[in-house]
Length: 498
Image (cartoon, rainbow, N blue to C red; front, side, top):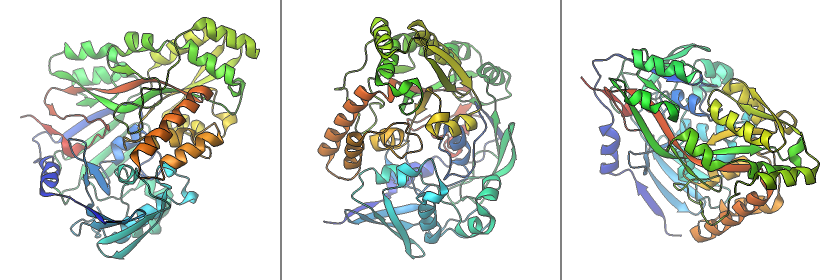
């Protein structure tokens, strides 16, 4: 095929550079998160609390600019040599925080590490179409994929570059507690369960970071996060409850920031263990949940109903697959037919998710004849159970999924493709469709495959789409920041009004 060349243009670079702001008079920025990071190794857990922290320690191969377009970060340009081979040119002016130079070897190593099955990365399914990567010289990496992979660049937006020599010297366990990247901030101190302190990397290649110190605090209780913001103990809080936005808006010196995202609120339903192995039970759960009531009463406009596990910004999203109407009588009929009256269902959750929403779903399910108990844990434990074997993964869990890639390949492939750590479901026809969709560059064929895949998910109900999520933050009025649809909390995009 004719080689396709994509270059980091002067305009795109200017957009990136414009976010690199001069040091603010305010020296410490404090951010309250619902949980502490589960890991600081960017190739392991993929969850918002971890990513919020480690995204600032590492640079990614690619990134998105303020308009959402894919642009280079460590890569400066890329060329498709054929349908399965792409060549990246790497910046030659970047150093890691220990002073060693970042080269193409580090990029190739980072790619090979995350696709290594032995690492057992929860992100593996989002990168496992990559076959290999090799540094052909100090500033060039050649990557090959197993087949044409249309979501490749969108997935590589999340690939953080780690230092090969340091990683091989200290090993994964020590790297997690003493990470070194090339990003704008280096780890200062990680007080497990309390806070993570980052220090500015004054040698950062783009510009001087806007704050000398950034402190991410683990504050599971949303009311405490709000109180911290109002009293000035925190400058930015994540995961603000929609029903408490008025309190922030009415308080002097605080404001609400929100953005519609590609994230989808959904129910996971275990199709491989317990009462939910019966498809009639899973369908009864779908009929029992009043999605419009959840959005109206608990999200207060910060969400939009969807019939599938996907949202409009995502390639592959379709509004042509019917959802489940709210029909509690139909749910009771199916439960009786399955002999599942009073079936005990364990509902997993963590402080990352709205307790009120989880309890509302619990009540809806109990009202039609189930016996639902909520099992709450910290996010790290929640993730471990969800990614574990079906017998320990609970019957149900609420989730708010985003691949930060705006492609269905990053959503329904890892969630439901058999063999994925997240999937507690297997259907060969479904697998064939999502495999096909990630192996062709034909957009029309991909859309047709995804529509059929969503129809299968609709019938089998291993999960249930509830709503397109809005990211809602509370912020000090002096904080300049525009949140993005991919929910990247990148400190270089922030500044402080004087």
